[in-house]
Length: 229
Image 1 (cartoon, helix red, strand yellow):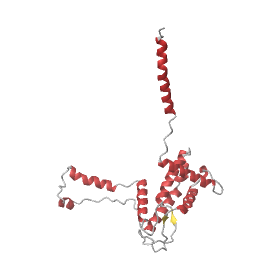
Image 2 (tube, one colour):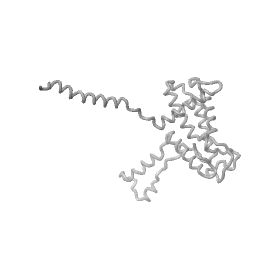
Image 3 (tube, one colour):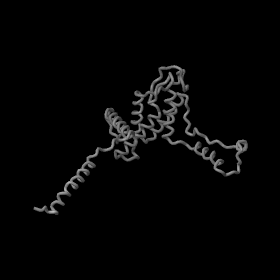
Image 4 (tube, rainbow, N blue to C red):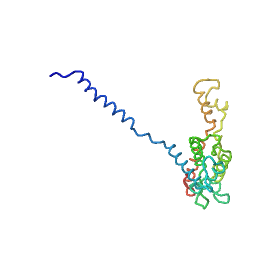
């Protein structure tokens, strides 16, 4: 007895269709990508801040939080800091590399606080609140961070200069002594000008924070300092 070609064709097409459905099911059931390190840290910081507001007396919500409450939170975090900030009466005040340890208090480094405020500000806006009402962007918070930055710079003897890289002028005498013709417009004569333009640019806020935090960590590797948090 001969088999029906139409019936056999339909039976052969069935495994292919089921295989395609299985493949689609595998794609639908793929696990989501894990959050980045920044997103995970931002989530932890936001949960910590909310827990602080719940334990506040009286308890507060983020919508009722002000810049003064944010400053209180930053001062609360100082007890967990690892940066030793020398007091004006300390013999190591203003010395970048103290030769011994002292009893000055440990504080949160300015770079850590500045980065924390940036993450909390982003988390606050992502929660659906309007950016103009963000307590993390309040003027008192900016002034407090500036005071912490300047005070820690004086205590550690590392001045903070936003325009640290100053533009240097190329004198004609130096150009002639190096054998370069001032009127020559070749690529060799234009290269120093590009380098000076890059050196004179003002660094961004995030780059300045990273530079100061790295300098603080390097200075604290001596016997008189602690690691920067």
